[in-house]
Picture (cartoon, rainbow, N blue to C red):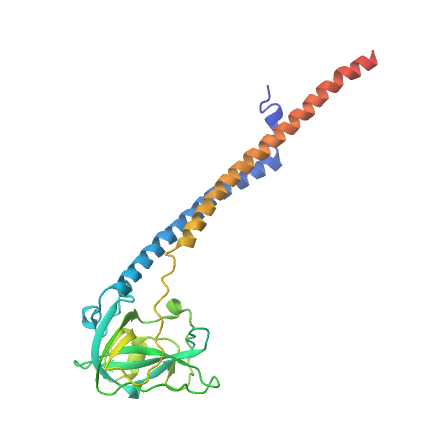
Length: 272
């Protein structure tokens, strides 16, 4: 009966030992990749649910979630807030490299000074780029007097969170990142450690930048779930292919042995 001393002895040859090692290495690798994708799925699903809940929640006063000098929590991203104050157009900025609906443009960033003398950056919306890279865009002025702003609360941007690399030497009044900490160094009042993405304003101005669209929450990591299942399916494919190759090799060797056994008696008869 076939055993390691017979048909299965080939499993101990260098070529097959190398195959065993490869299979034994890829299986834990696929397990790790699958678990990593499942972890990303859970993380993104939780983030999607949190952002969706924040967007759908009723607006709350800004001071309940953020104060001057304190960074906005990641858990409060896109939470709707309201804040009243007066715009400070003397320190308004535009934010470069902000495409919208396939067009190059800028975000319009204007500080809003509140009653207690602190301020918050308000992203009033988007304007198209000028005729050239150095041309200043046309920006509708903010309304004068007291206003009440409703918008989505956002943490300050960093190079890591935005994917935009900051650099010096920009034209006056332009920035690349909405970084309240850095922008606040040039202001005579303290800023909230984040900014508000305007969705509504009272009183409404005659002209205004185009609103920034609400974030695309996405599928909540659905692709990560699919990739995780895919990696674990690869484990079955690897094991199944390994077993199939062994069985095919055994079948070939048995066929050769059977053929050799059939030829031997015929050869002895011919010799006699």
